[in-house]
Length: 265
Image (tube, rainbow, N blue to C red; front, side):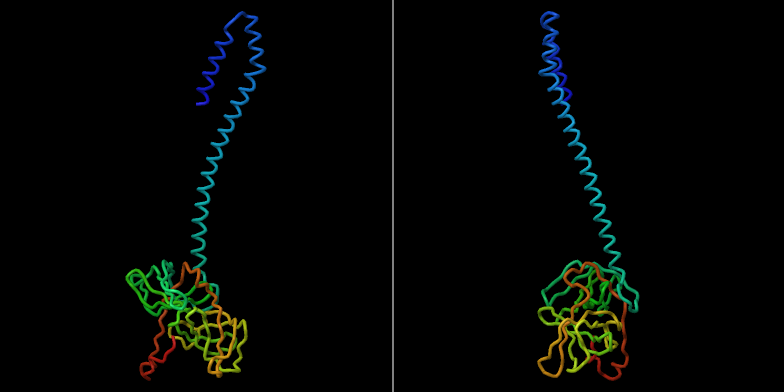
């Protein structure tokens, strides 16, 4: 368009310069050169340069957008693999990773839905971990999906212990999703910042898997025990990828002794 516009302008100027005598044409040429042609040519060149810069800017913008998309994909892939590397020392069993695709309920009644199920050999009561500690357990399975009950659920019970002295207690949660280590006798050696891990009493989790740290201690309502509030290592509010351990712990003695219902998860 700019080139066509130039062509017509040049034709008009050429016809204008052809009119009159030779001397008069020279005067017109000098006048136009000083007053019109040079500024016009400068303006046209400026407009063309500006359009070229706009085109180059748009091209670079498209390249930048493609690179940002590529970086986002690489970042997602990196996050996926990072979430498969456990950040603690504990026995590692056969496992697979699963994506959290939905949740249901609030606070102490919340469940998570995972994208792995029976077709991936997932079973109820399999333990679920994050890279920093435990998250919960599988409570129900479908063909391609499963239901995760997190440790912040009121129905979740777990035998836990302090890492420093193997002091045992019971992990429970209240309706607001706060997690406690209960059944600690008054005078027990427990302090703020102590690390809580899964215990040998659990039939769901192997022992020594990290749970969290003690952040508050108070006397229980019965005045005989302590309730130690736990800050879990895994952030349950930002779950995206979890690790399902293909681990089952069969206790034969409980069947023989008839104490199946007393076993702590």
